[in-house]
Image (cartoon, rainbow, N blue to C red; front, side, top):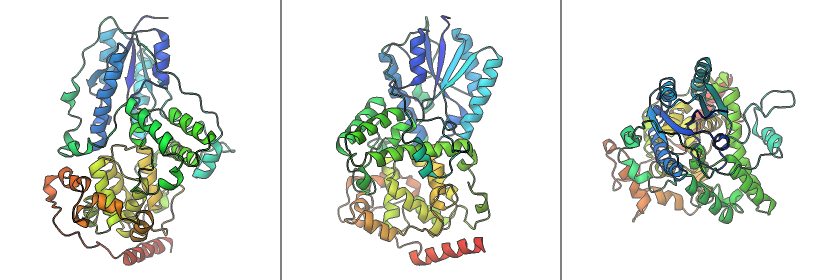
Length: 470
């Protein structure tokens, strides 16, 4: 036993309930120093996720203060910051919750190696996922490449009950210096868009739990049907909170499982979607190149275009395809995009516009407040055809038929495209307040004509696919 302080290096675990590292640290009785480091890896986040992370940090700092603790903020490489804080405080251990993207793994592996060599007790914990990616194996001991067998493997696997939140945290005799969060300017790259998107985010653990409870009470029964309708509030919205660790996947699983046992019709579909996130992390752990290169190497010579003028129209929501444009504008106004719409815009960019999926992946990484490295990579590669368990390249979503099927009353289109309404609503007009002024967009301008004829675009994509396979 020791009375030396323990540093808790926080990253994407901004919660008190079901936080395994925090729970064990609280039980130790040792003085605890929660620390968030704005390191180069975090500095590299896109505009929207970095801004949203800053909001989460501020909210979690308040939660810690209510328990008699503080959140210490420092800026710089982890291997420069941690030794300094260790020396300043007399701490002899650093704990953190694991992350799984290749950049974080490389950083954390080096940090653990260096700290242990210096005699510091460096320890990592689970908590970001239901199952550690290496825990789920096929019958032959390999990893899963297809979702359905993965789901069947984990559906009835025991998930530990969520751990209660600590009621108090022991404080050190004196607190080390902390940066001021406002000095970090986490939202600088958002510019004027921050004020628009701020109306649509729900920040912090309390908001996440309220959001979950509301969905379980009012939405989960119809989820299997309503989740595909972008004009209906039919999803949980919890992806925003999950990505920053403001709610535990075990808490969500427990609530969904209880709903399923109570007869909620959409509960199993909801649990499958939570496991889809697990599958993305499973693949990212076993095949980390999924985040930056074709998962299937045979797609390396496919005739995708690099960034181009058509892709710029796509980014701006000016393709002339209402379903695509409504989705892109939704992302600029709310920081999120409906899942059905994500499939449509990804298929349109990679197939009708024959543009590389990495162009879309990078744009989502800049604009989504619920950006997640594993889900974003797998989603884009699934839609493009280059990834695991993917939609075949010859399965090309037609935005025109999709919008008639999933937005038959045009509510979604009119909600976000001002040019389609005589009296556009506030969200449609908010798009023009959020986008860069340099785009010089004006809601009074006519809605653009389609960039490509859908039939011709499909024919061009299929021809490229046939040439690749000839």
